[in-house]
Length: 197
Image 1 (cartoon, one colour):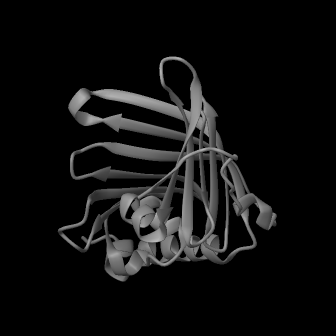
Image 2 (cartoon, rainbow, N blue to C red):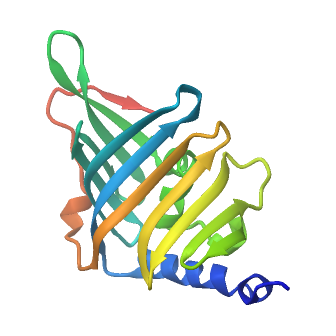
C-alpha cells in the first residue's frame, strides 16, 4: 500500500512551506555545525559557528576549528578565510556572483530564495520528519538532498554530490528574529587582494 504522503505530496508540500517561511520571514538565527565527508579520501571535517539569514540574504560565520566567513547580500557573496603562507596567516577574500554560489550549493539555493523545492526535487523517502529528496534534473550536481524538521523548524539540511561527498548543516537554537541589515554587508579590509569567481 502506498503511504498517504507519497500519494498526495503532503510531505513535500510541508517542506516547501517551511522553506518559503524561511525565505519570507523577518530573519532567522541559529548555531550551526557544518560537516563535510569526502568520500574518495574517507575523510570528515567539522566546523562550528553561527548563521543568520533574512529575505534572501545570509551570513555564515564559522569560527571553529578554522575561521570562515560567508556573507551574501542577495546579489554578491563574499567569502573570507585565513590562508597560511608559511610565514604568517593572512585573509583570503573571494567575491562570487549569485549564480556561482547557487550552483555550488543546492542547500544555499533553497535557503536563499529562488529555488522551488516542488519544482526541482521529488520526494523519494520520508521517515517521520526526515525527508530524502532526489533531483528532477538527472544532470544535477546533487544526487540526494536530505532535510530534517523539528515541527515547523529546520533541524538539518544535507546534500550528497555526484562524487558521493556529503555536506550537512545541523541547526541548534533556531529562532526567528529581526536581523540587522548590517549583518549582510561586507567590506574587505584595506589592502586585502580580492579574487573574483
